Image (tube, rainbow, N blue to C red):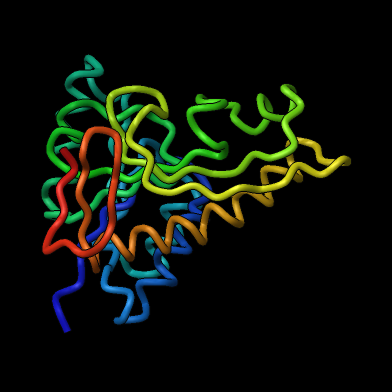
Length: 209
């Protein structure tokens, strides 16, 4: 079997997407393993999940650096130390700077069908707009807010009695499954990017630019 792809996962909270990746990577056929988990704050459940799985962790706080640019450089250096094939922003609540996205392919998720409803309140905004279908998006991160090339999307119906919490919970269930599937396929099959079109499979390797 070929060598497992190396994943560095970035978290800011509970780490449910991280847990899904940890669970998937326990199966050698998945083709990837989480080699480190990074965070922008300590005392979060995501780090606890990593430590329970005996995965190395690191914390890089923005407040510990004189400028955002220096934090960007420090975070990229921490990630680079683990030589990842893929970085996964799994509920990471900071926009990644050029030192990271310019050096590594970064997969991110969003709880809406982009380009509709980007930003921190995608579920709330979709409900307020009265849509009947929303969903989740897996994308390659770029320097914008939820503007990177889309890798995959899956729809979730909005039910008549949905509130933000109930709808978000159903979206997150789909998001975890889709993220695990896409990350595994990218590592096993490779991918290419042409403009804004991402294609997985039938490739000997991947590139994010």
